[in-house]
Image (cartoon, rainbow, N blue to C red; front, side, top):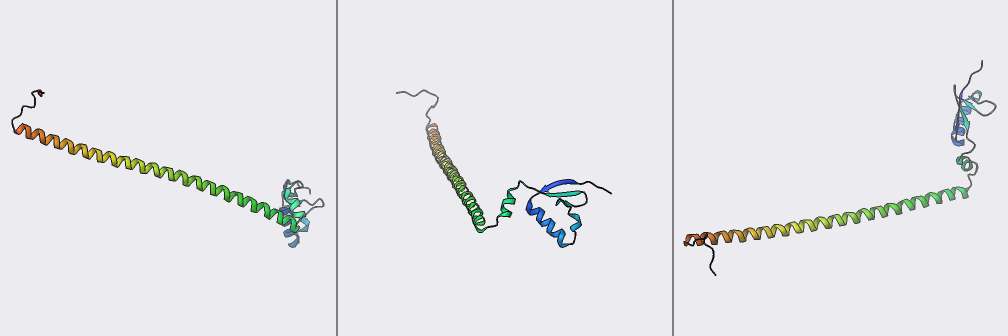
Length: 144
C-alpha cells in the first residue's frame, strides 16, 4: 500500500531535534531512505539553504564569539537609540511644560489685570454715585 505526504522543509535544527526524538523512541521506521521523516501525512525535510545550517555546522568558539559580538552590537545600538528617543521625549516634555507655565503665567497676569480693571471700574462707579448724590447733572456735557 502506498501513501503520499505533503513535504515541508524545516531548518536543520528542527529536523535534527525531531529525528533525534524519533530515533530515541525507536521510530526509525518513520525516516525513509532519503532522510524524509514521515509523520503520517506530514513529511519534514531538512532545508538546505538555511543560514542556520552554517551555524550548526560550525559551532567553533570563534563563531560563537562573533555571534555574541554582533548581538552585543545590536543591543548597544538599540540602547543608544532608546536613550536618544528618551532624550527627545524629555525635551518635548520640557517644552510642553514651559509653554504650560507661560500660559498660566499669562493667564494669572490677565486675571490680575482684570481684577485691577474691576477695582478701577468700581471706584469710578462710586465716584459717579457721589457726584449724583451732590446733585451734579451727569447728562450735561462737561465744560472746559
